[in-house]
Length: 112
Image (cartoon, rainbow, N blue to C red; front, side, top):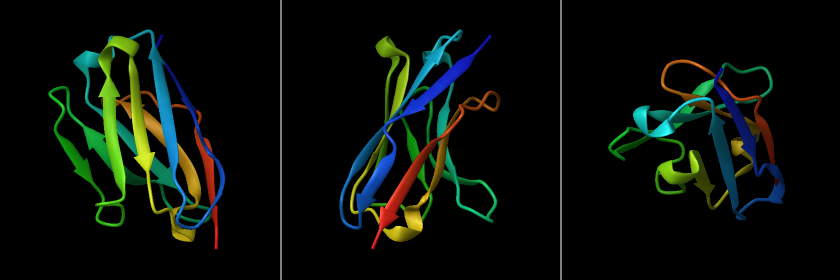
């Protein structure tokens, strides 16, 4: 059974940074593409960033140049480095393995 556990969320001020982590168990993460998604109150879940097995990355336009997705296959962990945070980045952030399992999410709140 695949389990994903996100961590690293919190409350920060606009312009600050956070680094989210997603640790996978029950699966060999290097075999899968990984993704970060977010869901703000009253809005649909949206894609933030993805990284393929080979390490190619893709970002939503709203986070390009500010967020960086990376992976450490030896640790079975994927990261999301978030810089220059804005209040509109406030959401619950989820990771996903392949097209399947989701983590439980971690709250990110950015105050103005």
